[in-house]
Amino acid sequence: MSKEPDLTVSILVDNSAEEVFKAINNPREWWQGEFMGNTDVLNEEFAYRVEDVHFSKQKVITLVPNKKVVWLITDSNLTFVDVKDEWTGTKIHFDITTENGKTKLTFTHEGLVPSFQCYAACSGAWGGLIAKSLFSYITTGKGVKLF
Image (cartoon, rainbow, N blue to C red; front, top):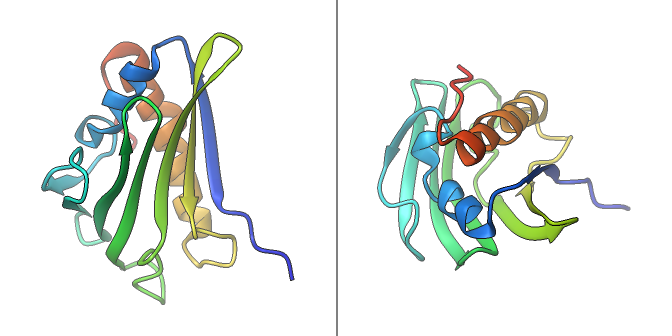
C-alpha cells in the first residue's frame, strides 16, 4: 500500500536564505492568530490559537540556520472536525534551498494527508498562509491577513 502524500507548498523568492529563515521563525507576522511562547528557540514549545476553531502546541525540534525548521505538533484541538486531535503527532517542515539563483522554501505538513477530515480546509489555509502571507512577509516585510 502506498503512503498518502503529505501536504506540500513551495515558493521561490529573490530574498536570501537568511531572510527566509528569519521570516519563518516570526510566524506572528504571517500566521494569523494568537501565539504564546517562543517560536524560534530549539526545544521550546509554543501554542497557537484561532478563536474557538483551532488550537495547537508546537515544539521546535529542528532549527538549522538558513536551511531548515521543523515543528512537532504535540497537542491539537480542531473544533471543525470529528477527530479533534487530528494534527497531534504531525510535523511542520520548512526547507530552504537554492534554485536557479533564487531561494526556494518548501513547506511540508508531514502527516497532514488527504484522508484527514481537515485536509481540504487545512490545505487551503496552508496554501494561502505560505504562498500569500509568508511570501508577502518575506518579500515586502508585511504579511497578508487571510481571515
